[in-house]
Amino acid sequence: MQIDVVTLFPQWFDWFRGQRHVANALEAGHDLRALDLREHTPLTGGQVDDTPFGGGAGMVLRVDVMDHALRAFYDTDPVELRKERRVIALTPGGRMLDDGLVDELAAEPAVTLLCGRYEGFDERIVQHFCSDAVSIGRYVIAGGELAAMVVCDAVLRKLPGALGHVDSAAEESFSVALGGDPEYPHYTRPAEYRGWSVPEVLLSGHHEEIRRWRRARSRERGASGTA
Ligand code: 6GU
Image (cartoon, rainbow, N blue to C red; front, side, top):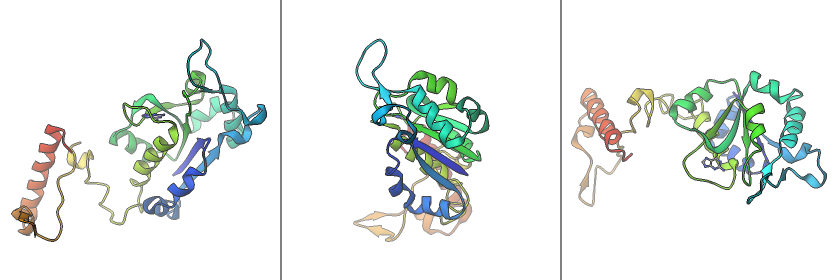
């Protein structure tokens, strides 16, 4: 899979690339590039944003700047680019990221994530250059970079080879294998600590009973909403 992040802070992703499961995915042949939006701005002084028409606080990323940057990176009109690969605007008003969307993205050969800053994007960027808009939750963070890392983290760990164990990503919270419910509780040694003991069934060695116990706990958590 090939992921590009268009950002004003490409160096933030140097740290991210070093994280174990990200590094594993990259070593397995997947690709993550951080492309500097400012590098190709046609405006003087590295300007990329401007004040909003109609007034109001904050600054808005300019559509001409994004057009120039995407053309330079891909050598194609961004209006055409979104027909060739998913181009996603990261914005609090977008489609909420969940396990289903992560699976959808993990199946794509190539994805471009656009990071907003300030008050966000000129709406024409989203309308004409993007295939989707995605949000990571109902709150606002200062820019799309951390959201891009959340998306990349969730997507890359789904790819074969990113995690140590092949089954690690299959039966986990919100997965199809768990019927969309959160994961069951885990325990490890010591079997008793300060009088807190591990559920007996997990020490029993009865795989079918363990499986049923875990499924039931997962369902309970799904019903109560306390993952
Ligand atoms: Cl994708 N960006 C920003 N700036 N804030 C957010 C978000 C994205 N998702 C939730 N809050």
